[in-house]
Structures are given as C-alpha cells and as structure tokens.
Image 1 (spheres, rainbow, N blue to C red):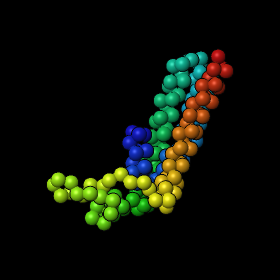
Image 2 (image 1 turned 120 degrees about the vertical axis):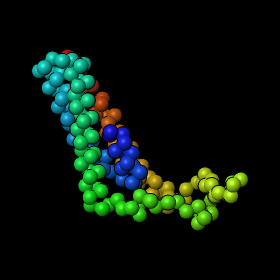
Image 3 (image 1 turned 45 degrees about the horizontal axis):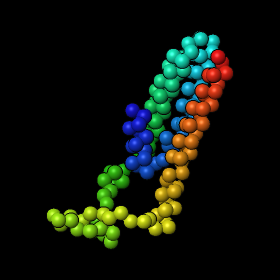
Image 4 (image 1 turned 90 degrees about the vertical axis):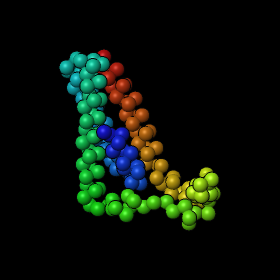
Length: 144
C-alpha cells in the first residue's frame, strides 16, 4: 500500500507529501523498537514487529494525506488526464505506422532546474530513511 501511495504522489508531481510522513513513521519505528526490544525482551522479532507496525503507520499517514489532497481539489481531472501532445513537440520522430515517438533529449537548463526541484525531496527522504535505519540498528544493538 505504501509503495502504491508513494507512486501516486510522485505521479501527481508531489514529492514532498511522502516526505512529511517520514518523521512520524521513523518515530513510531523507534518507539516500537525501544519498547519491544528493551522492556519486552523480544529481540529481533520485536524489531521486526516494530518495523511492520511502522509500515502500517506509514500507510495510514499517506492515506490521510492523499485524501486531503484529493478532497482539496489539488488533483483535478484535467491534471490527471493531461496528456503529452506529441504533435507540439519538436523532439519527436514518426514511426512506421505514422505515430510520433519521443526521442530522448538532453533537458534544457530550465527543465533541469525543475527536475532537480522534484528530485531533491525524494533524495532527502531516501537519505533520512537510511540514516534512521542505521540509528535504529545502533539503538537496538546498544540495548543488547
């Protein structure tokens, strides 16, 4: 569910909403690890249960954010069905059945800036998840 919701956010050109869920999910995972591995002495199984519970939290948070996004009308039928117009694109060629096919091109500086603005939050999310995973593993290892 979380992968589908993250893909839906990315498809709607919203890379920041999944990033908003990350602190809550990481906190839920850390809290679960501290409780299940520490006082409850469940070891690796406790860490696994905490991770699964955190994924459920992630799904719930992403569902709430998605519903807010749809209800607020930020996703309109026009935005969803906005299609690429190959006739207006100079970087296309005609194939054997007279369809225009886009040829791979180097982005313009303006397109590169737009792409970087879209990619930056996702790179931050990937880095934060990696860091949280390492921090949680270190916390669990220090508990014994």
